[in-house]
Length: 159
Image 1 (cartoon, rainbow, N blue to C red):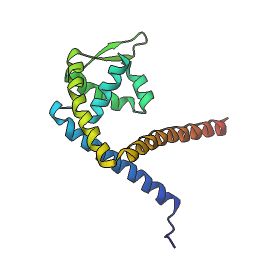
Image 2 (cartoon, rainbow, N blue to C red; image 1 turned 90 degrees about the horizontal axis):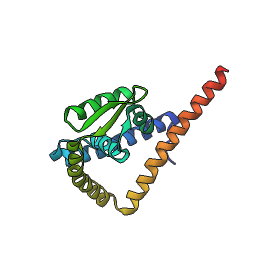
Image 3 (tube, rainbow, N blue to C red; image 1 turned 90 degrees about the vertical axis):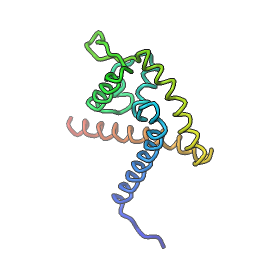
Image 4 (cartoon, one colour; image 1 turned 180 degrees about the vertical axis):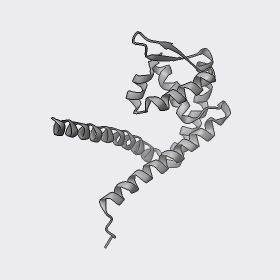
């Protein structure tokens, strides 16, 4: 007979497991990206802005669930490195795009990113790699839906 665990402990264990996995994976990518002097989070930002051509900071924050203040710090570092340029949009929002140096750095970094992906994919095996990717996407969507429901419930109670 298994040991009974209280629901709050189970939730904390899931959160702990996800955070531990996220930190370990991020450390792997950071280590592999070190030759191009980028962190995994910076590569992600450059990749997404490059994919969009240019992207407003508030839109990036909404799309990826990152606080605007956190993005301001991360974008500032990338601007100081000469990888991003910023312009003001029609509503005074900050719109970012890659500089030519940013595009070069991104192209170099992608070779290292592919190496990190290969190492992780090889360690996990193809079926676990695919399952993990699907579960990560589903977890993010479920968390957003849970937050949406909480907000909707609060609004109903206030009315």
